[in-house]
Image (cartoon, rainbow, N blue to C red):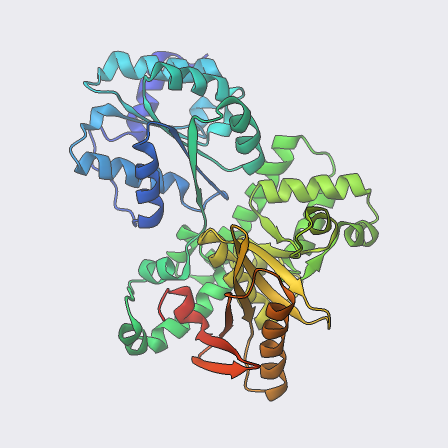
Amino acid sequence: MINKSDILETLSEWNFWNRALPETFARETYESDALQKSSTGEIVIVKGVRRCGKSTILINLIKRLIEDGVDPKDVLFVNLEDPKFINDLNTELLSLIRDTYLENLEPDATPFLFLDEIQNIKGFEKWLVKAYELKTSKIFITGSNASLLSREIGSALSGRYLDVTVFPLDFKEFLAFNGLTIHNRLEYLKHRLKINRLFEEYLRYGGFPRVALIDDPDLKRAELKSYFDSIILRDIVARYRLDNVEALMKLSVYLLSNISHLVSLNALVNHFRLSYDLISRYMEYLENAYLVLRVPKFDWSLRKQQVNPKKLYAIDMGLSNIVSFNVGQKYGDRIENLVCLELVRRKKELFYYRTAGDLEVDFIVQENEQLTMLIQVSAGIEDEKTRSREIRALVKAKKELKHARDAQLILLVPDAKESVEFQSETIRIFDLKMWLLGIE
């Protein structure tokens, strides 16, 4: 077991007791949400895909606390992926770290405890329960595996935690990382050429924070490839002790190459000639690691939602592009993936829908028992047939669906903005980039 002297040395390398705080980019939405939830006294869980910026958000929370007058010695940050801890990842290590910190720093107030990548500690949930009950710390934790956190914390910490799900950069954050802040339509129009150029970069390389700060395209691709390998090998293969790594890799590449398409488990079974159980488990693991997400077909019957094929989306366009064998995927599929991610960031409950005439609506937004938005995404509506099809799909779906009487009908396309009337319904056509930026 690592000794207290080595623990103190390691903690000193990560904490800001005697060194300056680093320069970082703020992620305002996540940081404010986490601090607000912490004020309740509950444990705050910051979760999301590997390398999406969770650790930086913890650092930013520490910076905000110190700026608000919290003594740096009243804050403890622990990186549980530090190589020095690798042989001692158990709850005894957590207790030893806490004791070493208390003995040497002697905090004056209830300390803030930040535990990064908590899922590396077997049985961490029991340790957290005890720490929570004793009120020894105000606790923030991060994790990269959705199933692990939801299952183990859900049962052990029921009623004791609140969570914040972090995604790679949205388009507004991506622009800020590239030195451009857009608040309104006038600023958008002023910087349209630069925004268009950055949008194409965002669509190609995605929104992982570190990738966004790299200029060289080859280095961007190398970084993305390393992320993909880490997610597969560390968050899935190692965690679930899988033997058939080749099958998992092939499935992952196939899925990331077929974004915005319907995917059924039975079709995957036939394609890969693997068992239904194996495909089902691997799909669950990929979702748990936040690599992909699936959107069900809308139906008031939960059973029908479960048995119908789901539409598949990637957590990040950069990851999809780096491994995809569909070089030059359809533009419409890629921007649809961006819209899905943005709606999920906005905490919308999503479905897709097919009308009686087999017209597809990309996204149905449900809030409580009401359907509030029907959204189509199109690469362009200059062609009259395309324009008519997209509009007819929205109007027909609204007429078919119960509880959609007051739903907004929205069509998102590049570089267009207007409202049209069709069969007594109003369809609002938005410029996709402006919509992503929250500008109307």
